Image 1 (cartoon, rainbow, N blue to C red):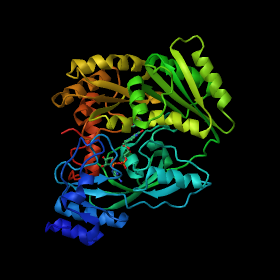
Image 2: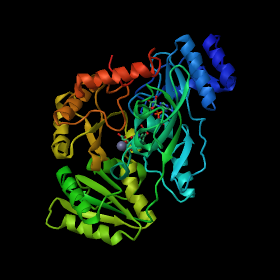
Image 3: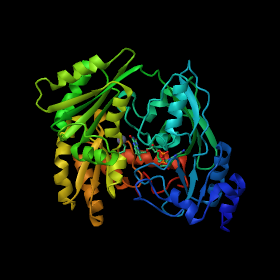
Image 4: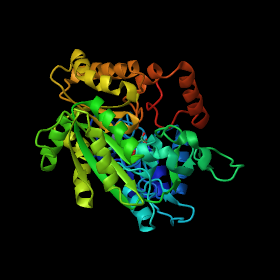
Amino acid sequence: MTTADPLVARLAEVVGPTQVLDDPGSCAAFETDWTGRWQGRARAVVRPADTAEVAAVVTACADQGAAIVPQGGNTGLVGGSVPRDGEVVVSLTRLDDLGPVGVDAREVTVGAGATLAAVQEHAAAAGLAYGVDLAARDSATIGGTIATDAGGIRVVRYGATRAQVRRLEVVLADGRIVEGGVGDGGGPSGEPADLGSVIGSEGTLALITSARLRLLQPPRHRAVALLAVSDVAAALRAQEVIVRVAGPLEASELVQAEGLRRVVQGTGQRPPFAVTPPAAVLVEVAGADPVADRLVAAVGAAAEGDPGVLDALVGVDAADRTRLWQLREAHTEALAAAGPVVKLDVVVPLAALAGFVDGLPAIVRGAGGESCEVVVFGHLGVGDLHVNLLGVPTPWVTAVEDAVCAAVVAAGGRPDGEHGVGVQKRAWVPRSRSADEVAAMRATARAFDPAGLLNPGVRLPD
Ligand code: FAD
Ligand code: 2HG
Ligand code: ZN
């Protein structure tokens, strides 16, 4: 700590001087997002140790009218986790307590700063599992995943993060601590506060300090298949047949040739197929009894009479399953290694998905991205797609983003998917939601945070 800023001095009294950073070198990692695209200076970075310290930090900021950016693992991809204009960054990563697992109630209470991986391992040690998983699991925090309502690779089976949260403890914008249930996870009736709107609010309504999470009985057997397909329409047909024959899927993920090539190059893994297919769909089936035969039968049924299914691999033992999953999970890292990436996480209705993906290269070219590489992958089961664009000339980034978002809306979808609105999609909120819906969002924000101190510039349009 180096400054004479009186707010920073007060924050140091609350959390101790070593937990307040204000020199550029120490703040840098908290000021730039995972993609490197969004960055800004923080007035200071504060790292409280517990809920009481978070409340005292927020009270001190509120007294001075100082804006706050809550931050977890800083793996967000829409610019919402880093400062824009001298806000105080409140990093929640030290709130990483893992409470005892309630085996009978199938739940656990954890600090907002616990990583997803830590919670998964903690649940597994008690014979249970947590229903959310994503490739950033080692850094992404429970607080961040709740604040974004993260989806992830199990979303088709267990729903997004909202479906896993029973109770929240939060610190409001004026420093008060509130505990409450969320929706039907709130326990006995007479629950005083429903904090459901905090889920997915991207740090704009409250700082999440801890959460009681629903856990589940993990399936004992798993099998994974990667089907090479001619296009997205064939991927969707295959998914439909596999669900019909094998039952509900644990995961159903789409990748394309360009992404597969980048992943193979980046990981050094052998190409999965002799000829890289235009697209592939990864499906996982799980159950209490062995599931391999069921999956093999389902893959056979999908291929039978459908020339769009070109080839298939099935992985049953853990090493094979991991290898197949790596081909999907390594996309973000492999693309990041190739240079700056323009990322758009969008949701498109399944009926419009194939047409949307097929039309994307022309849309991107038409908006100034003539020499761009278009890579689409994502959560096929729920129509949440990650449009990654390599080589977009800087002056054309906004035009290209707008063209893709406009195509999403025209297809009946939403330009903000599981990653949230952040800074990136703010302008698209009124173009993809009704005026009444936007008014309701504003009213909720005003009720929680009348002075507008929590993550200003994120989520809500000006
Ligand atoms: P941060 O990035 O720190 O913050 C994200 C947002 O939440 C910000 O607006 C921030 O202000 C707010 N916030 C953070 N903590 C709190 C808190 N305690 N209280 C209030 N607000 C808070 N996302 C998916 O949905 N699905 C995926 O499959 C997925 N895969 C990914 C894979 C990789 C390799 C990477 C890099 C990212 C991926 N993401 C995915 C995006 C990201 O991991 C998620 O958005 C995640 O939920 C962010 O968690 P975090 O702790 O890093 O939050
Ligand atoms: C995933 O599903 C993540 O892997 C990241 O949501 C998506 O990198 C991306 O665009
Ligand atoms: Zn995703």
